[in-house]
Amino acid sequence: MSTVPRSPDGTTAAPILEVIDIRAGYGSIEVLHRVSLRVAPGSVMALLGPNGGGKSTLLNVCAGTISPISGEVRLGGSAITGISADGRARRGICTIPEGRGIFPNLSVLENLLMATHVGVPLDRIEEVAFAQFPQLAGRRKQMAGTLSGGEQQMLALARALATNPKVILLDELSMGLAPIVVGQLYDKVRQLASLGLSILLVEQFSRTALPIADRAAVLLQGIIAYEGSPAEMEEALSANYFGG
Figure (spheres, rainbow, N blue to C red):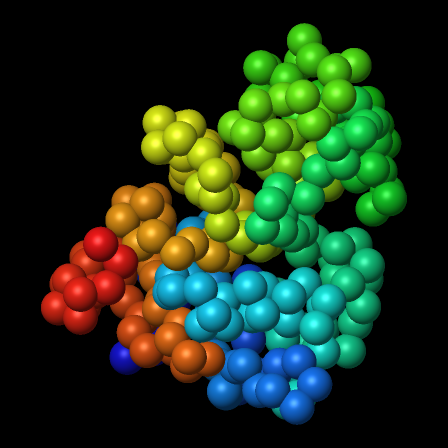
């Protein structure tokens, strides 16, 4: 059911991020079995499925923190499979891991400072971060660990955006957050995609992610079981009693 992705206006688009026939795992355990997936420019691709299906493993392969057994990862049409995680970050792949990935014992500003490793000056990082998330502007000196869960996720997003990424890999944005906060954060994700950012979003709960997605896929036991538009996915998931 996999097809060439389309941009948000419905036209065929060359993928900004593509994984081709990826096999990957841990030690002797193979988790992903020839997985292929494409993310169109300026779009949100939602990767859905239950825990243990391989979603985070696929993100780690894209980020370069796990080397695949076989297959290829492409960014903007160029193979990056052999490039390190740091090298991929410098080329525009930014990961927000499950659990937000902030430094709780550092201040908001110190967390943003960590993003300068990709070569973006701090004043530019502050400008972008606080323009997108003004709620954080008055908390520059506050320890990140004392922020609310939603504010911590805002900080993780702000730090990612400040690096001027081409693709954001977003793992379980909704984890541990109240539904109203999740809705606000996903509205921001949709807004960022409308401005041209490409996002590969991993989410366990389909009804949370599908409203903001351009396309979606379900990863079950290391295989892409379904792929299509949000409307097609709703129908497929309902028929298979998944994602309720």
